[in-house]
Amino acid sequence: MSAKVISADLLAKMFLAGAKYLENNKEYINELNVFPVPDGDTGTNMTLTILSAAKELNGVTDVNMQTVCKAVSSGSLRGARGNSGVILSQLIRGFTKIASNYDELDVAILDEACQKAVKTAYKAVMVPKEGTILTVAAGVAKKAEELHASGTEDLEEFLKGIVDEAQRVLLTTPDLLPVLKEAGVVDSGGQGLLECLKGAYDAFCGKEIDFSFNTSSKKKEKEPVKEELKFTYSAEFEVLLSKNFNVKNEIDLKDYLETIGDSITLTVENDTVKISLNTNDPGLPLQKGLKYGDLNGIQIQNLKLKSSGTAPSVSVPKKTEPRKKYGFIAVSVGEGINEIFTSLGVDYIISGGQTMNPSTEDMLNAIENVNAETIFILPNNKNIIMAANQARDLTSDKQIVVIPTKTVPQGITAVINFMAEMEAEENESQMNEGISNVKTGQVTYAVRDTVIDNHEIHQDDFMGIGDHGILSVGKQRDDVTLEMIQALADDGSELISVYYGSDVSEKDAKMLQARIEEAFPSVDIEMQYGGQPIYYYIVSVE
Image 1 (spheres, one colour):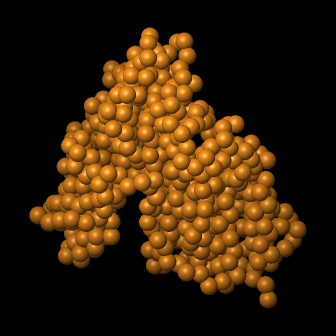
Image 2: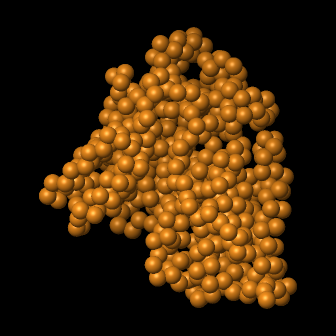
Image 3: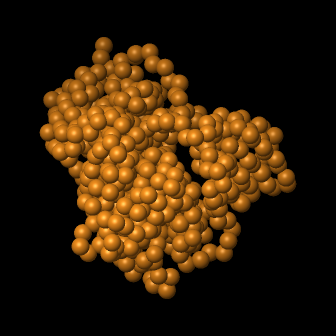
C-alpha cells in the first residue's frame, strides 16, 4: 500500500537525513566552486547552516509538526552562512510556514509548501540569478505542481519525481551561467540542495541512515605555517552570569571547551565565570558563553604571530557601556586589518571573511554586544552580505544598517567616510558612494586546474582576482600581483593600498612596494601589514 501522508516524526527523520547527505558530500560541493581558490566553501556553509537546524531539531522533546517546523526554521535562519546557506534557510523557512499548519503532510500540502519555499527564497535575494540553487528550487516547485495536478497521491512517486527533476535541472545550470560551463561544473548550491532532497527521499523510503554528525569545519592548508601549533588563537574572557549556573553547567561547559581547544582554565567567582583557552575558532567559546550571560573583557591573540612579536590583541567592547548614537560591526580576519578597523572606531570585530563566513547568529551576537541606537554592519565580503541582512531583519530593538561592502578595502573606505554629526540615512548614502570608488584585487593560489575568464589556470598557480573576475595568473607571485594592479589602475588612480598577509615577510612586501612605486611614480603607494591568511596580498586602488 502506498504512503499518502508524512507524519511529524517522519518529517524530522527526512530532514536529518537530508542534513547528513549534505554533510557527507560537503567537500565535493566545495570543489564545485567556480573559482579554484583554497577557501571555496559553499558545501561547508550549507552544511553548517543545516547542522544548526539539525541541532535544534534534536533538542525537541514534544515532537509534532509545529515543533519540528519551528526548530528547523529558527535553527537554519540563525545558523545560515554564505549566500547559499542563507538561501537554503529561506527555502526551509517558506516550506515550514505552510507545513506547520498541519498535523500530517500529503501531496497537496507538499506542493503548496514547495511553492511558498521558492517564493520566500527569491524574495530574500535582491537580484536573483538563474543557474543557481534558486533555479533548482524553482524546478522542484514546478514539478511538485505538475505531479499534484496529475492527481497522484502516492508520496513515493511524488518525492522521486521531485528528486529526479532536481537532478535534471541541476545539469542545465551550466547552460544558464556561462561561468559554470567555462569551469566545467554545475552550480555548487544546487548540488547541495539536491543532496538534501536525496537524503529526505531515502529516509522516506526507509533506508537505514547513520544520523551521527561531524561538526568539524576544518579546512586543508596549503602548507604548515613556520611553527606547527595545534591551536592558532588564545582567548580570554568573562561571562557575567544572567541565570543560575550550577555544578552541572560548569562540567558541561568545560567538557564543551575541551572539544574545541586546550590549555583550558575555567573559574567561577560569585556571578562571574572566567575562561581562557587555546582554540582554532575563538568565536565558538564566545557563542557558548553567551548562553549563560553577558561577555566582558574579551582578549584574543594569534599565537603563531605572537611568537614572532607581531600580534596585536583584539578587544571587544563591553555590552554594558552607555548607549551611544552610532556603532560599527566589521567582519575581518588578520591582526593587522583588525587593528586598522578598531583604530578607525569599529566597536566589534567578527572573526571571519572569505576563509570562514560568519553565521547570522554571529551577527546577532555582535549586535547584542554593541550598545548603540544605530549599528552599521560591514560584511566586507559578497558572500556575507545576505547573512548580515538576515540578522538585520531579525533585530527589532536597534536600527541596523548593512553597508554592502564586498571587500576589506571597501569596508575601510566606508568607515573613513562616516561622519558622526550626520544622520544615519546621510551616512549610509555617503558610505555607499565611497565604496563605489574602490577597486579591489586579491592574490591567492589555485587548488585545481581550470579555465576562467579566458585564463588557463593550473594547480598552485598564483591568481590575481578582481571585483569581477580573474585579472592575472602566473608562477611568480609578485609578477601576478603587479599585473593585477596594472589591470585595476587607470589614469585617474591616486592611491594604491596594499595589505600583505601572514605568509608574506616584511622584506618581501617592501620589495614589492618598490616595484609598484617604480611602475606608478605619480600614485601614492601604501604598504601595510594585514596578517590575513590564504590571500598573500589584498590591494585597493582609488
